[in-house]
Amino acid sequence: MRLTSTAVALLVAAAIAGVGATVSAAGAVVVTAEATADGVATDVAEAWESAPVYVDATQDGIVPSDEAERLAGRVEGHSPAVYLAVVPATALSDQPGDSNRARAEAFLEAVSAAGGPDGVYIAVFAGAATYGADYGVDSGVTAAVETAVDRHTRSQQVAILDDALTELGVPGAPQEPGGRGWVLPVVVVLVVLALAAGALVWWRRRRADAADAAEGPATYRPSFDVLDDEADSLDERQRLAREDVTRFGEELDAADLDVTDPAVAADAQAAMDAYAEAGGAVDGTPGDEVLRALRSTVEYGRWRLACAQARLAGRPLPARRADCFFDQRHGVSVTDWMYTPPGGRAREIPVCAACRDRLAGAAR
Image 1 (spheres, rainbow, N blue to C red):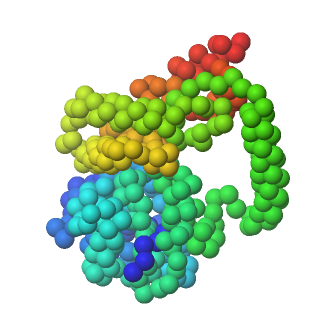
Image 2 (cartoon, one colour; image 1 turned 180 degrees about the vertical axis):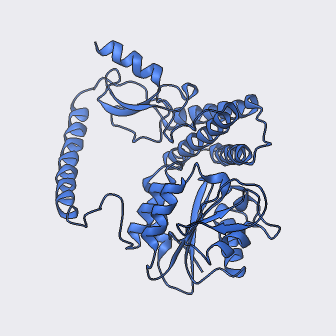
Image 3 (cartoon, rainbow, N blue to C red; image 1 turned 90 degrees about the vertical axis):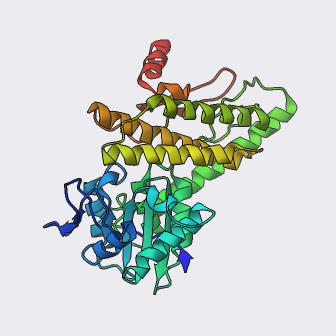
């Protein structure tokens, strides 16, 4: 069996009382928020008999119903068949194994053993992790999922699914409603930009060798590329990462969430899973690759914590965006802003409303 990336099944879960599943007029499976006695894997296998996408009722913030319907339409009739499941993080953590990959493999094996159809499976575990496998077919989806995951943050699960499907050759990506006529000009533009960027990097490095440039310390932002005007050390980035993870843990403790509501409980569990994963990653001497993944994990955890708090307060769920660049304690960003640090060069950063207003005032 191969872990892969495949989008496949539309079950849009609605939080309704009772146990069991029904099929909507649109062909989407609607399930209750409470899993059956046989477990989530059995629910997924049974749902895929009627529709290609399953979304647990507690996970509508990860893949909204309209996006689930669209994904179901995209994979409909594709060969080999593809199936998608969006399930709580506990569906992963409850499985045996010493890694998320091993636990995901165990979950997907359980779905297949419960009567899941032959085809390509992809499972989104509350946005905390995304894995896939193929059964009875040879799809090569492992590389497709890994490529898609590398291109996006954990909070961009719809984009990850669309990207994985595109890597698998499934037509109908959102950016190509009129076909693939846009591909060639876009590729040409990207090649030109890449050549220009390479020339700029070479020139800047030559200039840096010739004279000292004005440089300032970089703050811990491994979600973003480390630019050549950022002169901090790896030790400094590691220290700031540990402080950030510690602060995230304190935020979780201070939240003191009432998890009576299953949707709130799912958000809280996902946030705690993200904290546990980040805490393990920050131990020792992680390199920049690990720090970038770590930053994405913490951002995702903070977003799920914010979702839980919003549900309890009766507010709309926050947008799935990165935290404010200047201080994670400012919360989720509301927009992107072009910013030039002292002695550095311009880059686009995510900012909260207060920092946006401050920057706008300074620009006047």
